Length: 408
Ligand SMILES: *Cc1c(COP(=O)(O)O)cnc(C)c1O
Image (cartoon, rainbow, N blue to C red; front, side):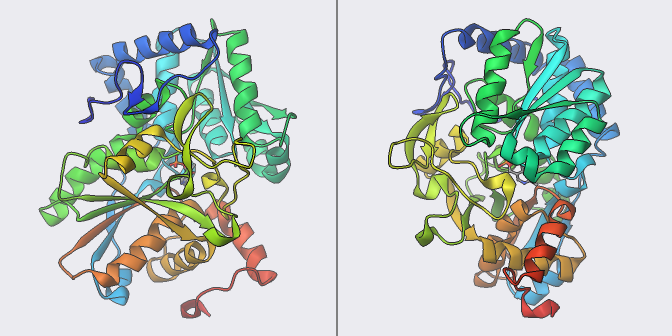
């Protein structure tokens, strides 16, 4: 299970990005994790077990699907979706939680801890911990606990304890801080299961490894259905795990353009967005160096997106590297463009996309009409939108979202 990339280097750097900017007590714990990962990533029995749960628990493989109706309507490039929405729990996150929890078992750990923002990673972690019979504690900002009551209840149903982080802004950043502190307290027995391609080394490499199944399948499936690779691979970027999972297997194919789509929120000019790569500058938070959005004091900025899974003020370090190397391009889509795409895919194809994935779709819908009918766009549909339907319904009711005319 090796990927094409030769990075990060031994110190966890992708060029100048990544690394391990953590307090001294965390370093031996991270190094123990890095050693275990190196030991098991190519171990046939580990890979067999990982593939078993991907298939039997999550229902992999997921198909690539040609959007014939949408393609015809837009009148340009063919649009394919990689259907990560069809995973158990409705998104790509389970690919990573299965891999990391198997690693935790190999390391002899008894307890799983994890951070969560909107709750999607918390739910995937709680489900996998229930499957593997592991004790599970999820750290969640107190504000998010209030906003995401249903996900809190889901986690509790599957046996997890949810701890509300009460410090600072009481959102994702504080949840990560408290989870890291709890980890240092009992590293002997505890495994920290991180949810995106962020954090100190070795997490970006671990998460990439376990998400690269997305790109590996998609590459083979495109060759099967079209006899060639796509011209574009497009994915939304929050922390960057679904995007890196797709990109990694195409990075060596010079003819395939890689495009990451960040949330422009209400519009970049209003300052309410989370476009870390498009508008941020170099900065360290949560133990790694990357592109980061900062406030006047140089602290992580408060960020915003209509989709709770994308509002993070930094981004996975490998994306920062791919941007500076010119190998991937990073663009943005606004709330309005994302909700238009959300309605459009639902109406044209009978598939309700997650609001996160709708950002990737929005860019594909802009791009397709500018290309020829021979061109192919592959969009990573990172998750399904059932979780977002109540929010969109309320926004339509109060007039803050207006469905595009096709569905009125
Ligand atoms: C969490 C989530 C994302 C954002 O996370 P990445 O690490 O950037 O992939 C995107 N889509 C869905 C459906 C999610 O649940």
